[in-house]
Structures are given as structure tokens and as C-alpha cells.
Image (cartoon, rainbow, N blue to C red; front, side):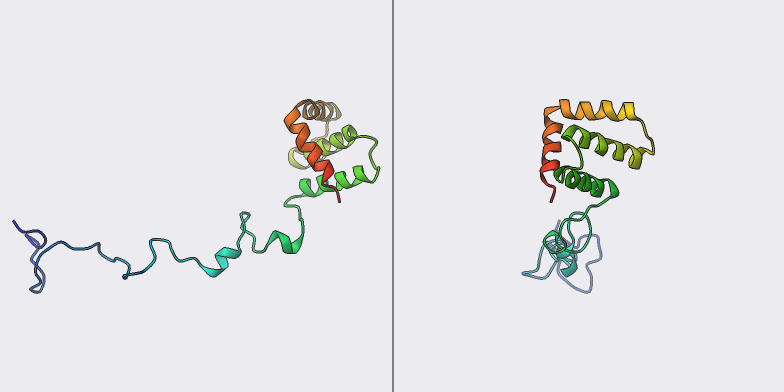
Length: 131
């Protein structure tokens, strides 16, 4: 038995034999998916075109922008303490995301955020980023 064209009709007198992969890239070509569209390099993880260095910090949603506003207000003395600012942030999240207003739930969530060391560290970073 010969390798290649046995039982396949040969094909215009060509000799049978080992064949390379059909539709292979030309010699020296890139591998699968090697070409990158020029605009693709400009697209960031969010899918938006641009660079974070050019436009400055922009909030992706209303809650994030409100968190930055609360942090600025805390830095400027608008809140008496970080606990009060945390409660304002929790109330904003409840209002925006869940469409609800509950002072007891806001207090419980704010207390839980401040009691958890990891989440408290996140809050501290948020409060320190106020410009």
C-alpha cells in the first residue's frame, strides 16, 4: 500500500505521498490568530477606545462617581467622620442598585464593612483617593 492517493483517484497524475495541512499559511507566515487589527491595540479591558492616562479618572457608573464625590466631601469636611461617609456610600448603593431606602439596613451594612479588616482597607483606600 502506498501513502497518499490510494483509493482517492489520484488527481491529474500527481504522485501520491504525504501531504501537508490543507490551507497552510505561507512559509514564514504568522501562526493562527497572529494578525492583530490596529484598532484592537487601542481597546482597553472595558472595551472603550482610549488610554486611562489621556482622559483622567472617569467613573464607569453613577455609584462610582458618587463614591468619589463622597470621598471629596469627606476630605473637605462635609462629613464628621469616616463612619458617616461610609453610611452615605452604602445608602447611595442601596438607592441606585436596589431602589430602596432603609436606614437600619444602611447602618447594619456600614457596620459590617467597617468590622471586616479587608473591606475596611478598601474603604480607607477609597477615602484616601479623594482629590
